Image (tube, rainbow, N blue to C red; front, side):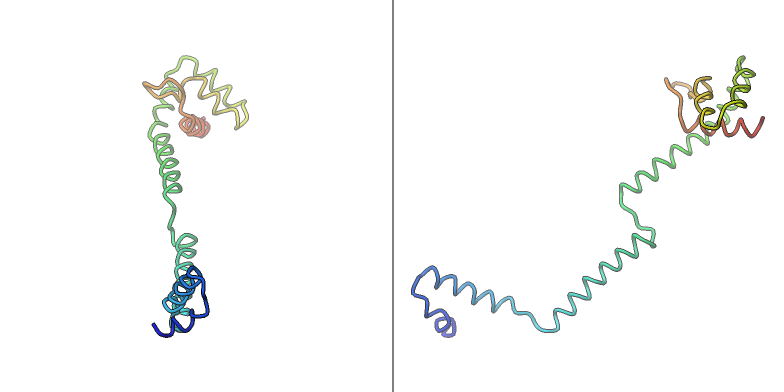
Length: 145
């Protein structure tokens, strides 16, 4: 306490004296051992390295990336499961010959729309065609013809 009084004694203003006391205490508290800086720096750099390696090469991912991946996989699974239904619908459709002729003549970018317009890619109970199913169906129909 004596050192504080000597350090801050030159201040006659009470507010300055109080600020001096606070600063003195903070200086005393905030001094860290010399070994602390390399330890904290190493820990911080190590954590950063683990994060970079984990997300870059370790297979870690954010929740939004995982949601996108699961959504994409579920759409692909639905299309794969319903492709036989689509192919069967094309075989029993009375307009099948006309649609298959259009498919053969069409460019690869137009084939999905042709399958959607024919109604083969609309699952039971759905009011509009499933795009991924139409793509899988036109690919399967192109293979079989």
